[in-house]
Image 1: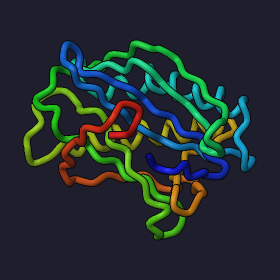
Image 2 (image 1 turned 180 degrees about the horizontal axis):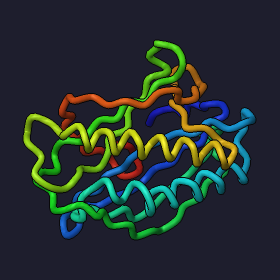
Image 3 (image 1 turned 135 degrees about the horizontal axis):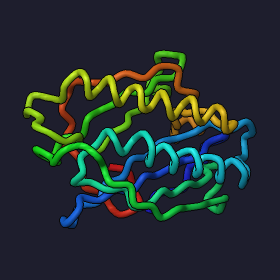
Image 4 (image 1 turned 120 degrees about the vertical axis):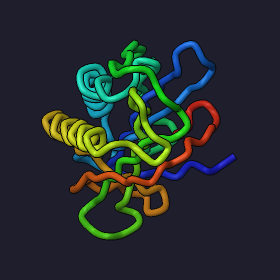
Length: 196
């Protein structure tokens, strides 16, 4: 079993999704920087509210109706026993049926310095429609970058900041730019409760 590695001023949100009618679970994991080194219960509640609302009103219009978000889990990464909250939801995507599920669109998150500890990845749930094996289209990527920018803005209003967490460095860094990669990324199957 891996030792717990604390990350200061960091809250992790895990968005749990499923492929409707199939035994496939997916997770998106995103991080937020708090004002204090030890996130409070209020920080946890604020992140849960922001992410839950974002999933329903923004994220769900960017993935296929074959997929559904079922839960949002939020926890402090300050200590192994720390504030935690979750919400059961049912946010089905609104786009047309999937062409294929294997490849995850890759959105890039960067802090203010070109350091590997300030580079993060968000593997978005698959969009609907015909998506060629050569990659997703520019309009889809532009929409997902805009969606994560929206999440960043809403998080700031709630007193936290979209961030990149580094377990090696034990800190998280505010996201200052959001982009995408055209590289097709094969989804990985991991144990329940871990990112994909």
